[in-house]
Length: 351
Image (cartoon, rainbow, N blue to C red; front, side, top):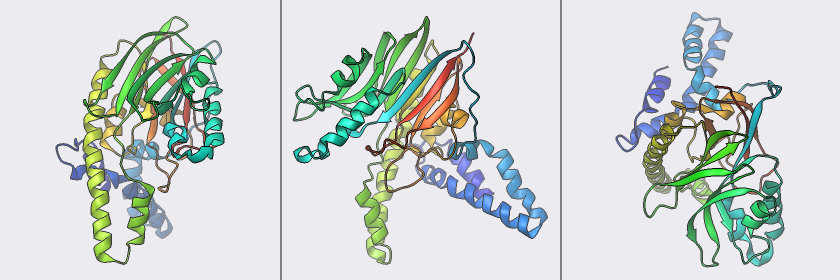
């Protein structure tokens, strides 16, 4: 019970002010699971101690629901104005692993999947477009071919003259747009676009926050070092150092993003790869102001990271008053990136 309370308190501590709090908050899922096991144990024992874990679950249900959602589709209201939004870190459509064209067929499949998805708005991170390539000319294949409006913020241009950044595609007109930079030399950023949805304006954000900078090999090295104390300490310190750097950077970025969101004159939908789990300062800052589409309309665990660490939900869609999420889906059928796509449908509510 104390562990849960400490973890919840640490969610509110900015990592740049006291970074150890971020590691305590990271452990909160373990505390919540352990509390559930205590509930089962005391139930079997038929002890009055069962009241304690039950009380934690009741008071802390909002944190449990961040990790696992239980919702049933309520259906689309008759005559409602709706907006479907897809968010996806496309991992540069695997262009950098396309040695001698061996990945080209899979990349093309991913591009076509995105281009033909029925969403009204696409928010894509780590977007890659090369006008000199038939396969990777994605601005044309996704936007021009299907008559979509777009706002593409280029973070950098690689040696193949390909543009890389984040993009919003929409079948509704864009009436205003802008970029939120998280530092002059930082490729991470957010962009926003005000779109006219049949007479109503909705502001769409897509963000790509600081990466965890942890690769599959780093995790494998740590696992393989178990049993070798010196090696394990070395690998553990390396992971902790990278996590600390990411916690601090994302904390600053989330605060800057939220400042901009709070000034929006329109209802907002905030999509992106936040690179932080639901028990983090980054997520908590956004959740204090906005609703989360997975929590309100999703089911199950909703893991979005397609890598060696299971059950991680680091991609999200948040939304403000004036909107209501009625559907949410994690697209496990599209597993060609290191992230799974997520989509949600919203009702634009009457004022």
